[in-house]
Amino acid sequence: MIIGLTGTIGSGKSTVSARLAKLGALVLDADTISREAVKKGADGLNKIAEVFGKEVIDANGELDRKALAGIVFSDESKRLILNGIIHPQVLKALKERTHGEKALNPDRMIVWDVPLLIEVGWVEYVDSVWLVTAPEQTRINRIMARDGCTIKQAQSRICAQMSEEEKARFSNEIIDNGGSLEQLYQRVDALYSEYSNMQSL
Ligand code: ADP
Image (tube, rainbow, N blue to C red; front, top):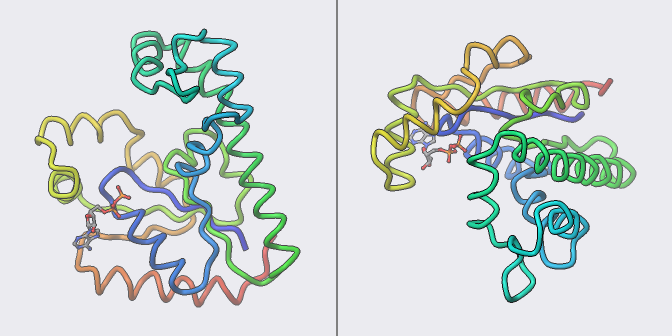
């Protein structure tokens, strides 16, 4: 059973994925995988250098994130080109690791922790989409407390993403995290039990 776990920033998605890992699921984190895809010597980094030039590689042969951000944040077409390099590599790694785990532990729940699961169209590769939600003010407060940023910064990070309402239309389960951690864990534990007993597609 492959679960696609997603949520807008500050909703509590990472808290849910940590809980699922503790319960026994294998969590595959797209952010971690995408960092691996651009580390020194990786295919992804080589392609980025081919397309964006040597100025995005620092003196140690590593990705100069600041230089790359400067290029893609001011030019939407370049951001799409960058996504076109990184996203297929992340998807390939997710599929390979899923395949490998299924061969070893066919009944283990596998969680794809992907912040932009719906936006990138990977819903079709998972058996069930779980969306973590929380009221906007709660998300803003959590982002400010976690990252030490201003209210304006927290709001702009939320605004940059697809709305929760829209994401909900693509989701099979909504995990409401507007309450306490204890309530969240109760809901996640119940979903884990329910889905652990189901056959995957
Ligand atoms: P996301 O991965 O969706 O951005 P996190 O899981 O990192 O969100 O949660 C944001 C912050 O809010 C973290 O510091 C986390 O510990 C805290 N948090 C998450 N859920 C709750 C909750 N139900 N009650 C209190 N704090 C929470």
